Length: 249
Picture (tube, rainbow, N blue to C red):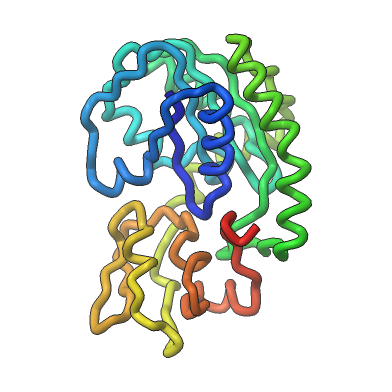
């Protein structure tokens, strides 16, 4: 079984590639998290978890959902994490999650994909994003080959910076930066409701045909990057920046 969480489509693309190559079941954690569905999943053996990197670990909402969900029959578990640059020491925490769930940890693979976190960084242009994805495809193929063969992923290289980023920076990143209070919608908003539909935490509601953000945000960037009229901004930090979602490619 392949479970994935995605903000702007990178992880979904990787998960679809893996599920298709392995002829395996593909399940969206976005849908389960959005609906509050924690019914048991019948995995029956191999489990592949695909997700983006949030502050050098897996997203907290994914971790918390997995801890609350019974994964019946799951054994060998591979993590595939996409990122704009690096995943830090995420493997340490993925291994700990496996211990809590009684799973056999089979390693963590890093796949560099186009950046989408425009609340802090710049997203690439469409052509730049295509080049990044093309460069990532062989790494996805290697991950697929290892999973198919039942082999562990090669351990990532760990530097002091990686350990600090995942252990010291991650805990303070959420309270300091993961907030929705800077999201706004301009007059070019057409009230289509796409942002409300895509939000995995039901943090967006339409009021008078305009999106209003609550306080429960994971900054997946789906709302701002999928807005068809580019009406959404994240304060001044997103102004003038390209938006990115995988379907554009």
